[in-house]
Length: 220
Image 1: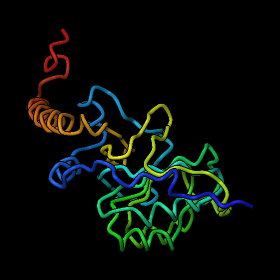
Image 2: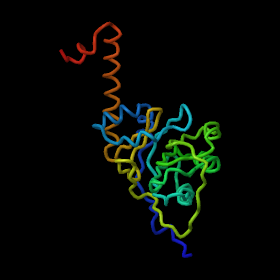
Image 3: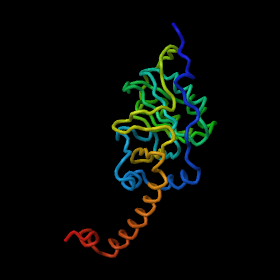
Image 4: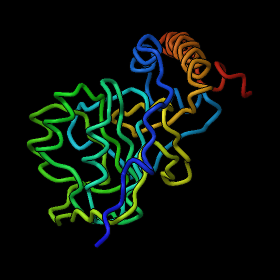
């Protein structure tokens, strides 16, 4: 079988967000960022943290992988940089364990910020012990192949539910889910999210003082 030259469908020169902006985004809840960005970027609710307490924030390194095959995830790991969040579309084939202890160990050593995959992973207990943030549809023991002739894409747009994720977009994941904010709108969304958090803190103080939500929001 003819081998596909991965370099033909791999982009290396992608925009990445500043560490300062990513650090600010990491402090905000995903729901706040989604609302602050005018209700965009919510990835499928089925994509959840594999272990309690997992949280990630970083620039998207996107992967479009053939279904039931994880060779392109290994290729992406090789070109990934510290701080990247790998965002994987597995061609709609969810019922495979695309990622496990081996790949998690490499990702952690390289300094990646997390994995978000529209599919399943394996080695759930070990992933929790290693502590590298993984967000997936669930756990699946069914294995994957490695077809060297199959075409995949690295750092090209991927469709996650109804959201198109571009390489370099802001990705934030927490216990509530995962949000993707376009690179060009990330700074604006984070600033709006910080204002929203401050406003909500003021509202909470009023509620704790005995006011009603109807009065606080002026809904009478």
